[in-house]
Image (tube, rainbow, N blue to C red; front, side):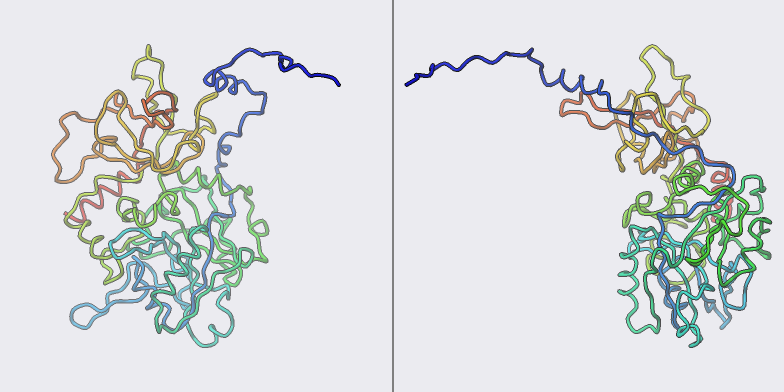
Length: 450
């Protein structure tokens, strides 16, 4: 019988590597680099908005029902003396076929005035409500909402429906499609006014889109007046695509998102956090999403009070991300122009890596948060910024800051992923910009209120 040795043969020992060294070795992995942000958007094109879904709502009570739960008017309201106050925007009725009467931008709020859903509401000329509702003489509409929140909005409608004579349903993705069309060669001057501003005429229609307006059974179109240069919103039936009627290059939802970021336009609950965002802080007041002359609706009290008695100290602004400067460099490296790049740097983090809701701090100093990051792509994104801290915007009725904002010296930083001792982690510098259209509308808005 063979007797085995009590001592097992020793295995060959490799070199000992500590955990921190192992982490550093992973950085030199041969795996391909992760993809950067989307390429720069084309100056003209159209995109299928996969981030949006549609709800059909129709019935004799549909206009009155929606009128009571959104921030824009759908019906004329009574005023003193028995007169009717006409809506500032063209009514979206079957008799009115002008482009301004095809729909509008608005929002659903909760009882405390916080944004639940930012939406576009269109007059349904596509027959999504069905022949039965149309034959009954009821009004039909299509609500466009963030795709991730379409079921939540349907539940919200059901909650308030009660005995209202209307029907609603979520449309299948291939049944009706939302598009964005833009052409930077067209002067945005006539398209820059918010949809809630009084206007005696409809905006001019680009030749590339004029033919779509003549096909109401296949397309619904309205100008996206949230900011200059946004273009037009178009709905089409599932059987029709815009390639059939437009001489423009097809783009995608990512390019449309970059265009929004560069113009400071927030959209969806990732950028307007549900039950947290305020409509005025989200720029809905200057984007034509709120009619302050409208009568009672859910969330009206706080919205009107903030408008007339409060000061909006925070707003969503477009932001540029850039790498932290070496200690030897000066603050003159702060970028002064908002220009898109698919990557912030060669190997560092990009906008997609920044956690949503991350606090913005002042570089080299401790103190109150200057804002919070919302979302981004490449080197640009949106953030909810404290205007006195991150911009030179002067708030009405507010005393000037002790240390005025200096755009060439003041820097702000995003930091995340550090350990308990504050070591390690990642960081990016962030600079907020106030678009010209926003400055202009804020000045006009201040003059109309005070």
